[in-house]
Image (cartoon, rainbow, N blue to C red; front, side, top):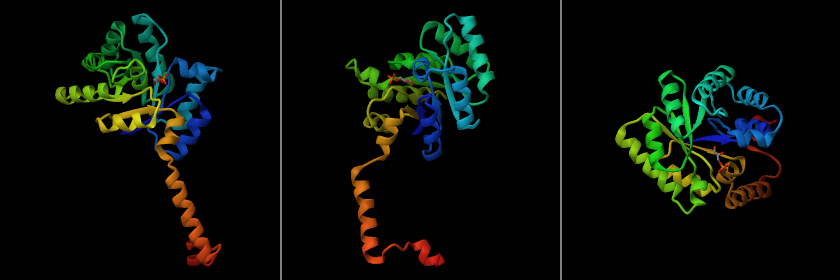
Length: 228
Ligand code: G3P
């Protein structure tokens, strides 16, 4: 399952883009508001950090059909290729999705809470649907199960629409959607670190270092091989 970073924090994006195999960055109005400053400059900086080959997902802020279309085109013109326009799953959103997708603009239909919404978004031509996991589970619904249902529906229909799961609060939720056949997940920096770290990994590494040092002192294999 491909992993994207769900943040507009430039320090986090620089760090994770360097050390972790992320495939892109997702933002929304709340995420941009959290960073403050000039949202356009932030988005441009994100594009410069991740380069043109990685995906950048940016949500529209306009509300009526014509202005959303103009905004979507402006976003893609401003941020270049591999920019996906995030459109909330509403009736106008479905119409916009069909219009933009028919014209070759990638759409990520977002704020998806049910498999029915995902099916309609896919039928409208969405490149991605973004089901919200923890926002669903907080309402005692089955967010992970919803991803499983969407994966089944998409497999039967043969659609090209991919599932980009979002809104995670635990690392286990990320693993669970991966098991259910989710194509991609967008996660915050905290969960990204939780996916990697394990106390037994840390103690194992410490044990290797201690044993090596006790037997061979400060040398390393590099020093022994190169005599440097
Ligand atoms: O990408 C959508 C996501 O940011 C929503 O996440 O944590 O606000 O529920 P959250």
